[in-house]
Length: 366
Figure (cartoon, rainbow, N blue to C red):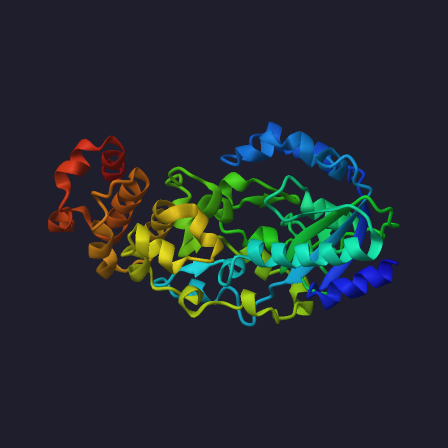
């Protein structure tokens, strides 16, 4: 039965299917509670609000007996960090360069679930990462891979580039064996982290660039801004340096191939987006959910890190923006790009700057 299910999953387009029980993953719940107690979830309040349901699949659905963990490969076809060498352009995480994987994966999960119900007559529920499921520990317990020192899943077949989905079922299916940890003494991911968010196999998201550019709703702390470089949505550094990626394969899923306009976008072009243009550009992309203001905050920080004084007029256009997130980032970026005595005429909204406490604080630091 397991091999028949696995074969059908591959036929539907998944690259792997493994099996786990609906019991708690040993140590996962305790680890989650420690993580929350330390406040490492930051703005991700939903993690604390749903902690009890995350503790085990059966806490989320009491009738569940087994879980089929399914994976899709989004491996890049080239160097995922190539854009970091071009400060006038923005780096977007590999996973967000194509269509929103939530939509693609959920559609495939539902189609597979319909086949499963017809074939076995069992009840099912399907989930992606928008649900309170501890996907990575569950995938590791099912033998799909192991959680590396960067805390992400690593597969011996696909490296670090996997999307995960789950089918919970009332059917009893013998579980697969867990995959042992193969990181050994390697600490490449910890060394590569631009902000030092990784240590001893644990992560502090409050320093993680993916968290700061995607989940964080407020101002990025001044000491962290220079470390973002030109990363405007997510960060792939810890994934890209993992030695196990020598086994990774470029995705063959058309939906996950990069859109040309998101592969290496010009920061100056992104800085000109109003809300309508933002929504149009990022339609069908996971980037759309952070909204124009957070994206512009990220873009302005990247411009401030560019070392390109010619970008100062582009940045200064936002000194009077309605959003505090944008104004503060613009003030910081202008001061990074030009000596204060050269800002002069660029500060068209000087009065607004001098009466805005948050922006004035940025101004005073330089």
